[in-house]
Length: 139
Image (cartoon, rainbow, N blue to C red; front, side, top):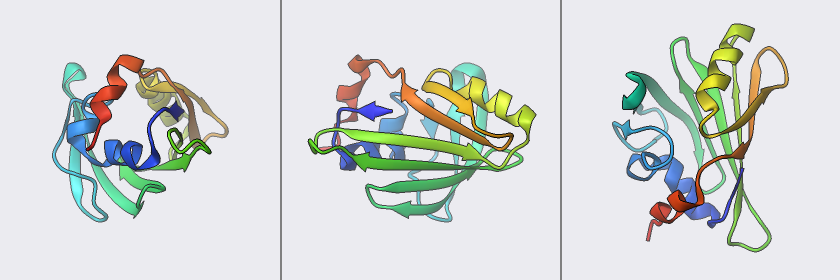
């Protein structure tokens, strides 16, 4: 998905639940930190899931494990040449084919997703309304 914000701001929006709650889940129990178990909640659906960050590379990559049974998700942040936009790639993997179907339904609000195999789900573009983007300001 292409987001018209610098990589540092987009990265922070995924790390900080006070920002993320404006475009994805409704509540997070803490910031993403490697090895720290937190909970993300979607109150409108009565659903929550445990999340553990396994790798964080500042402004470039976030890897997490989430759900029960746990699957892996990689968020990659690629700054565009203009320096004012970021391309985010999300890959969710490590589950069976029925899990791909269930997970893709959960991503529908945030982007168009497809499975490239029985174990990998790719999300390619965002449906985040432009009106929500100003709330991402971190500074």
